[in-house]
Length: 141
Image (cartoon, rainbow, N blue to C red; front, side):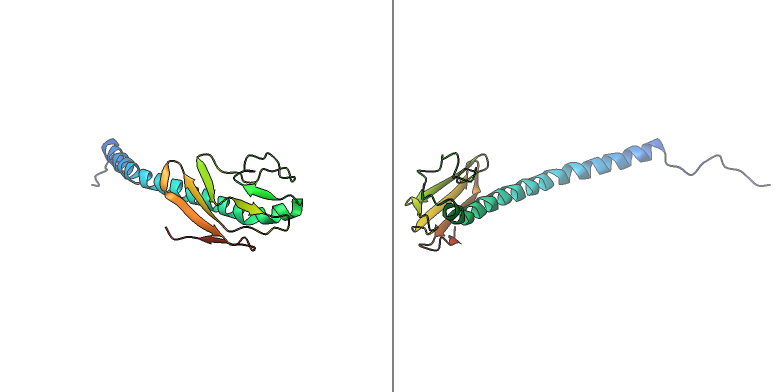
């Protein structure tokens, strides 16, 4: 005689609960690191956007044939192309020492630019804007 088993070969409720607890613990341990990495990448992308705007500014000044001095003209609503000189993400600041002057030919006076995020000191960066060419060169921290 053949003995039949009523077991269907599935998982018990206790086994399923154990697996869910283990998965929940793993997710709980890895998500904070993953979220911190995403935030760091977002801050780096914002800083890169500011750098790109600084590189593009002399071209915009030349196209609009209006000289500019930063930070004096920083709050100017429209450079003539419908945009302000720089659009900084929330919480970011930029300072120029001495003030950055850009002629209508798109040439710059030498200046140092310091970019910082108010709540994150590890995102601070400093740049040298070369005379005449306006080339943006990062300074070592």
